[in-house]
Image (tube, rainbow, N blue to C red):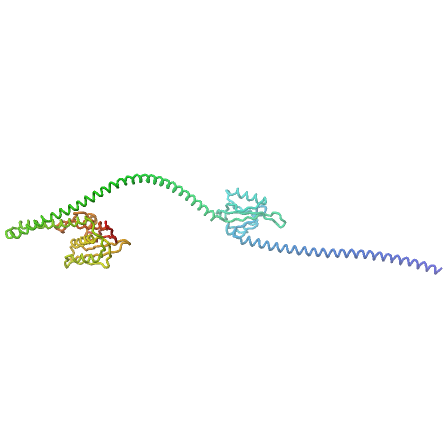
Amino acid sequence: MAQKQTYEELRQRVKELEKKALEHRLAEDRLRESTSRLQDAHDQAIVYAQELNEEITDRKRAEEALRESEERYRAVLEGSPDSIVVYDMEGKCSYINPAFTTVFGWISEELIGKKLDYVPEENWPEAELIIEKVLAGESFSGVESRRYTKDRNILDVSISAAIHLGRDGMPVGSVHILRDITDRKRVEEELQKAHHELERRVEERTAKLARITDQLKLELTERKRAEEALRVAHGDLKEKAADLEAANEELSQYAYVVSHDLKAPLRAIRNYVDFLWEDLEATLDGDQKMYLDSLNHAVLQGQELIEDLLEFSRVGGSSGPIKTIQIGALLKELVESLDLTQDIEIVMGKDFPTIDGEPTLLWQIFQNLIGNAIKFNTSAHKRVEIGWSPLGEDGYELFVRDNGIGIGPRHHERIFRVFQRLHTTQEYQGTGLGLAIVKKAASKLHASVRIESKAGEGSTFFVTLPKAQTEK
């Protein structure tokens, strides 16, 4: 009985152990399942952690790139020579760069968070258009407008604007770039004014040229008519010139013949006066001697006048041969031929030039000039200077200067006319033909003669000579 009870207890114990073993197996299965789930969760946690770490690394990189981009963006804004202002979507200022402060005068503390009122009333239409375009997402550049500075000066500006996006890609404001073009506009206005002025002047000049052209056409027509009339007149003039030349030649010949024929009667009169003096000198009273002296003086004047007329007519006659003239040698020979007294000094220049011309004519010119320099001179020491200077490439200017009585300027033209005298024969001897001979001889040499003188200050006669002559 006791054994049977022990068996039952054992069997019961075995059942309990089997039950516990089953429960243990079930617990192990649950543990293995739970462990497996935990392992899966652990693996998923590791993958998530790796993905999170990569995401954090990428975000850090993006943030660093964004920070660098913002720094570059700010450096560009800060260093820009153009004025830059950033507005938020409400139109309030959120940033201005240093150039904006320099140009317009406001600093950041005065504008940040505020609306900027610096648009002149007359420029609001284009300002509103700019705002509409920016809010619509459009970008633009080069819009010209005007803006006030802090001191209420008005500047001309060129505006460029674009929408400003946030990190999420949504619009957060707008960026406006303002370039000061005041100087450029001033230059453009000045150029425009200059252009209009130029156009006006061109129009005036064109109108003037048109008038001048019409005038020239008229003058050309008149000139053609005048040329035709001149051509006809020239033919008549040539004929009259030939007649005049022939008349002058006849007149010169007549003067020569008359002068020559008068010499013999005057010589006879003088001889008879001399005879009367010899035969009647002892019986003549004072008045009779005065009459004979006056007669003798008149005869001498007549002879002098005849000699000058002969010389004047010879100057007007046919031209002589053209020769090479050593002016210095000719003047030296001329001076030596003069009967000079001790109170007369002739000062000669040096290195006189050589010209081609008629020696006789040059002799007549300087014989009369030197003679007059001596004659019309009351100085105790009479000084006559003869010199020269080059005159360009084609001529020379010779002069005769004296310290004589001089000639007033109002007589400078008159003295070269025939028979013109400034003094009586009682004051100075002469016929009034000397300077007329000088002028005529100079004309034959294609030369000119002029005088510089004042009364009481001496005279200087200038003779301008070409280097070469041609035979007529």
